[in-house]
Amino acid sequence: MKTNATTLSDEIRDLGLEQYVLELEADGLTVVPASVTGVDPDLLDTCQSELLDAFTRVTGGCPISMENGPEGELVWPESQASFLRQPGDPDPTQVLFQQLLKTHRAFRDLTLNPSVDALMDHMIGRLPNGAKARRLSSANSFLKWQGEHGYGESLGLHADQAPNPLPWGTTALTANATWALSDYNLDNGALAYVPGSHRFGRHPSFPDAVKLAKPVDCERGDVIVWHGATWHGAYPKRTKGVRLNYVAYYRHQSVLPQENLKVTMADEPWDDCGDPNLMRELIGFDDVFPYLSGSQSFPRLAK
Ligand SMILES: O=C(O)CCC(=O)C(=O)O
Ligand SMILES: [Fe+2]
Image: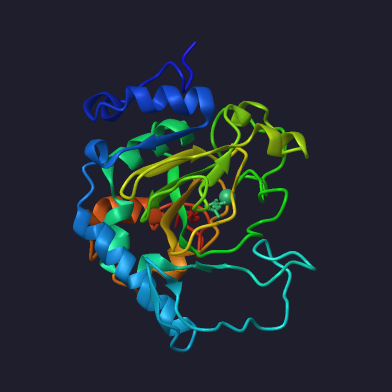
């Protein structure tokens, strides 16, 4: 019998990704270094400066630097519960930028990385006709600064494919490629994850999930790739400065996207990138579902 674990695509072999596939199968998460993905350092620099500029814009002028974090006093609106903030929590020390695919070509080009694409194809698999089922779900960035609380005692542990009904199988219904735009370690708010938890096929249970969690140590320029069933969250950022990333989030073609990219990107410069055909496929412009108008023909009564 062929399974994801035993079938390696030509791309996985050609790009020398076997070791990372093995880690994904065993642990549900892997870190692929820049020397393997061949990422262009200019892309990382451009994404970083775009995100820092975006922070200053959305805060109405708060300066920010990678070394110091926000360099002004921040006032949050009246508490709205969200995954960034539970009732009773202190003010958050992070923001989440969304809809990045349309904001700058650098985000689009980073999304097209061949190593990430091959790993997504491995985890998410193929449709019955052999077509690749991996599609983009959303494009985001977490910008985090110093704060003792973070996500609190739970470390915010969750599985990204949580909105999908149980039972989950081995095929990833969603999967995450997070480009580190700053170093990640325990003290500076690293991603926390539970090795092997993608094989539990369920939501995290507490407090055992927290006890099993480990920090993901990595360097700026590495990409952290994980299965949608892998339990993860983040440690609080205890050091000054910014922890920054770019998150390309994927889905199986049959799973609803977080951002309706087929609609939101239609009038945006989605083809202004290194591989417009791949971007077209990842957004799903040519997918049959969900359709905007009927596609079926009907027979006519012969005259
Ligand atoms: O780094 C974090 O704060 C958590 C990120 C996360 O949950 C995600 O990207 O799915
Ligand atoms: Fe997540």
